[in-house]
Length: 303
Image (cartoon, rainbow, N blue to C red; front, side, top):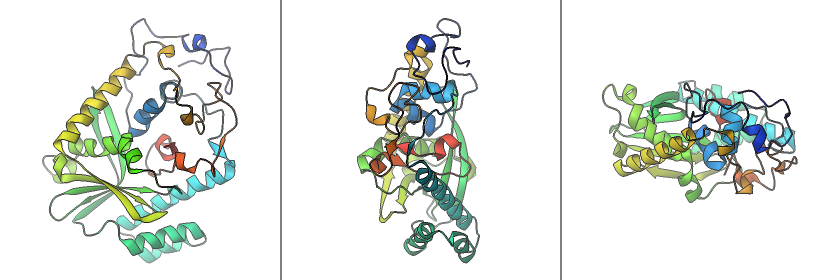
């Protein structure tokens, strides 16, 4: 989408500028070849305007996520490195060789040692690290790259997601995240390649978040036919709302300004140019880091 000539990165965008250059009346702004992910769906859930700016218009980020900027970047880079180490370990690289790659970064060494001591994955038949699956929702592709999917000897599957944020979210916050819905839903829909036949039944799936800063307090969510039905309805409903946006002004700014504090588009929206402090807002930031995922999903997202 073209940017209005009167708007520049960093300037608040008026609803008038957002309504220019629209496609035909009644036509969705969403490109026909768009692929949904938990990251894009979460953006829409947090703020429809963020979804518009980021995923439809592809606008550049005019503001930093958090201050101090370099410290924030270091935390994100360390989180990505940790995911890379665990991917190597699950792909068969000897642990001592992986451990050497963590040398020189004290925090990374601590995370690795905690992982080795706790053995969060446990006994498995097969594991699939950094595996991508593609299904569909409301006729559009739905994609995800998983940190790890572990197949148990009994034929059940456990999804693992590695988290490196300083603060651990409340279980209720995790339960409401799109990632907790999309990942098991997609595995039940598109996981036939892992089984060689039918994809895993919802009752055969669970999802675990393991926290490097809180290694003894993982959060596990069981899945079921009921969860799958509810999630499918919720996801279709959300995509329907996105498709209903035929004018840019339909993608309104969130009324919950806590989502703005660490949003890179806050100056675009006239919600302030000063970034939130990472020490004040760590509970609102969550580092994710699939090494193969879209960068949209690698950067910190707000809780």
